[in-house]
Length: 283
Image (cartoon, rainbow, N blue to C red; front, side, top):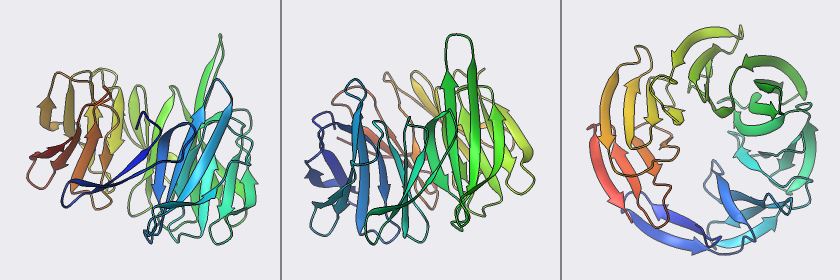
């Protein structure tokens, strides 16, 4: 929230369970541990060049650990599927791997000169994908780096033309979806070749997210949210509104789609995709 608190919601009852104070900066990257015991939330102050990652114990709703000793001021966080590792990144050109049992650093991965924009582990936990971008007055470069977590070695680089927004493995781990400001590319993880390219620039979509199984695309425009088939690109349904939608998020099983309104004090939408109609709008 804009007051630097973190809200926890019960999805089944659509009620706010708790509001967690403790961040010094606005938090915008969140990750639940696979066992549901912890929540990692990352926040920063770009102008002060300072940031922090808070680890919340969800049984007590208290801060278990503050991971502010990494030298970054803009962080993304994600847990490995086995829950033993937390990965975090920012513009200091490195990714930090944390041991969840001790909350100490156990390794770093170097994405060279580019700034990390997003992170995700493969379903088997063997790979870590990072979307990285670099800008100056003359060039714009974006790419996805893939690392083998066990060896710490970089195993592949996927080139892109725009600023990368999200990276997402499909549930079978065979494909990696990369959304940028003009297209969504499905990469074959084994061959590192294009499996499919979907143009989103023509639809003026500013935020694109792919479902866990890779079958659906949620695309946010200035005043609407559309659900499209990945294979054909055809729209399935659209929610029009006089509001600006921000980046949507699928539930892990792909049956729900949540989206925030970026305007202050506005609602969070929740869509039941099994019925393809709005399920509820929570304040």
